[in-house]
Length: 174
Image (cartoon, rainbow, N blue to C red; front, side, top):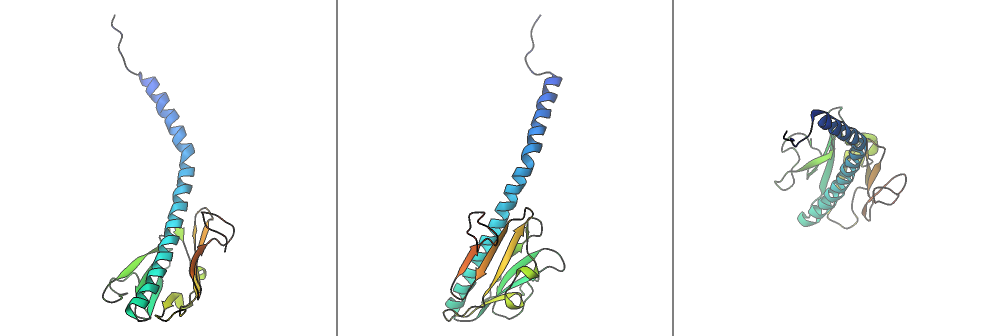
């Protein structure tokens, strides 16, 4: 009698069951890691965007506004750069600076959140004048599903990222 090589159906079912158990154990940790990384990415994006607005103000020697817009009553927020005092970040070509549209996601409402009470800039907008130390001071706090928070603070002197409660995510406490 010739011996056949391979796995039986029972062996394959047991291996699949063990694999499914391992995946179900690892899934929450993976989701938490993914959520943390999305929060850090949003905080860094906001930091870079505000720095870019400041440099554009100096480059073009004009006042530049960064608008923070919420889509209706959802948790989705965008930020846009403009030379106008008002614009809608969700309307195409509403926020334009020197003919170019600078419009990015601030929070997606799924992994990263913010609210009007988390934004301390007057009128939900930051403004930058080309003169030194002439900025609209304020801050924005971003959070995720796991309770982690990042705060981007624009003071008269500098722009920084920190955490409101305790040192976490690689940032110091505010």
